[in-house]
Length: 281
Image (cartoon, rainbow, N blue to C red; front, side, top):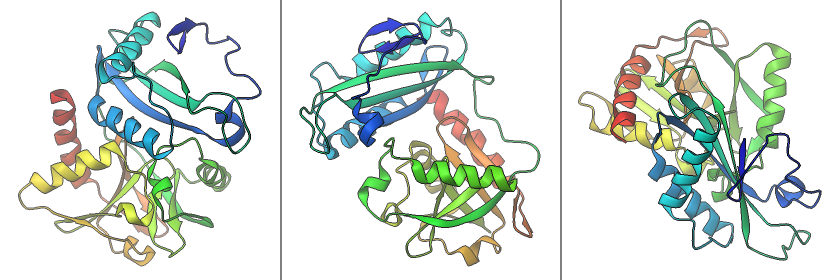
């Protein structure tokens, strides 16, 4: 079952029309969250990022779009799918209602909630090889729109095709200044000694929720230094570790980039702290 504007419908239902603005213009935002036994990981952070993004895109925020209302709709959808006692992946998409060309006829929005089962209730470190490559065909823009979680993800799609065709698990994306910004499905962190570095929002990376949480964890951990600075491709092969963060997987440790192989001791340590923070909300 999916939740379309509060109506619980079969996943096979014809919900979206040919005039859907998310389809035609990418005029949509989304949040992907983990829901474990009725608890949505970092829900307040996801909610406030969505509200901020809607304001930036000049979408009209409905009066009923409170934190409690959307949380209730997510949980209702999870329960309707029989996943209230199991780990669930939830995607909440908000898109401007039909009408208009580039200029919309209305700023009112619709929402769609989809859920699917997951294996583990908490974040686990990935096992086995995980190889990445630099994707240089197209660039991430250095502007605020790149910080938002919109459905304009064609760069990520093309990079995914490149990765699949060439046997890589992921790709590192760069901006017009040739700085490494993020990966296809999340933010990037680089470890060298006791220093943990991640690109700043000004370089065009996604304003990720787990990025934010991990920055808080690193800043509060004695013996670690956080740097929010640009990352050059030349730094990648000098690093001790590289890892990815996103809301579904938590931390994904990169094993290899070109001839360089990486450890994952720091990623493992931080993953434990991230799980603890998730349990506390």
